[in-house]
View 1: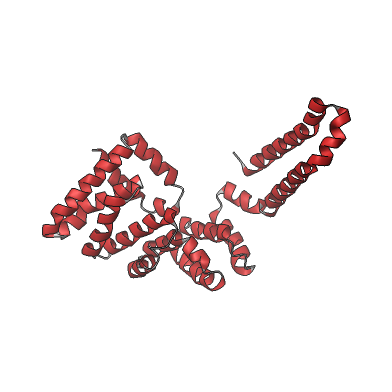
View 2 (view 1 turned 135 degrees about the horizontal axis):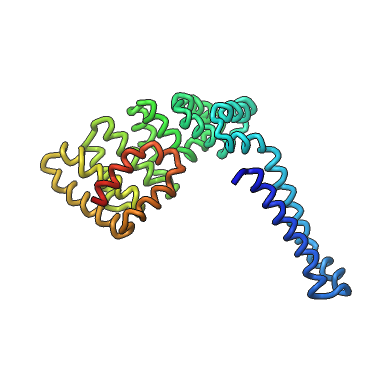
Amino acid sequence: MKFKSIFILLNILLLVFLAVLLLLPQVMLGSSFLTTFWRINWPLSLVWASFFIAFNTFYFINRRLFLLLEKEDWPALSRYLEERVIQKGQYSNRLVRLLANTYLVLSDSQAVINLESKVAQAKPALIDANVLVFGTARILSQDIPGAINFFKVRKDIEKTSQREWISWYYAFSLLLSSRFEEAGIEFLVLAHESEDAVITGLSSYFLSGDVIRSRGEKGKKYREVSLEGRERVLKTLPELKNWQKEVARLSSEIHVAAISRYMEEARQWIYT
C-alpha cells in the first residue's frame, strides 16, 4: 500500500474515532449530561487533537522521503538524506540508519564508512545504535581487519537484541581472515548457547565446515557442538517453512541480507 493511501486511511480512522468520541456520550447519557461529561473529560479531546496534529505534521515534513521510498529511487533518496543529515546536521537515529542502508543498497560501502566518521563526530552514540549496519559495510568493502576490531570492541555491549549478532559477525570476520581457532571459539559459544535459532544454525553450520577442518584433534568437539546446535534448531524450527518464515522476518535487516548466501547454505545443511 502506498504511503499516501496509508496516510489518508489513518486520517479517516482518526476522524471516525473523533465522531464516536463526540456522539457516544450524547447517545448514552443524553443531552442534559453532555456538558458535565465534557467538563470532566475534556482532556480526551486534547489528546486526540495533539495526536492528529502530530501525525499530520510528521507526514507533511517527511512526504518527500516517503515518496522516494515508495519509488525506490535510491540515488535520489541518498541525496535527499545527505542534505538532511550531513548538510543540515539532522543526526537522528532513523535518518542515519536509513542513509547507511541506502548506501548499502547502492553497493557503496565506502560511503557508509565516510558517514560513520561524520556520525562519530556529531553523535557518537548512533554508532553503537547501528553497529550491525556500519560493521557490515566494513566486511562488504573487504576491510576485514577493520571489521574484526570494530565488532570486537562492541560485542559485549548491553543491548541484548544486537549482542549475539555482533558476536556472530565478529566470529564471521575472524573466519574471513582465516583466524580459524579464534572464530571457532566464538562460533562454539553461539552454537551452544544462543537463543536465536538462526544464529544457532549459522554458527553450527560454520563449525561443521572450515573451522572443523582447520582444527585437527579439536574437530571432534566442534563437530559434536555443531550437531547439537543443528538439533536445537530443529526443535525450535522443526520444518523448513519455519526456518524460511524466520529468515523472511529478518530479511529486511541489511546485515541479514548481506549474508543471504550463507543463510541458504545453512538451510541446506540443517534440513537435508
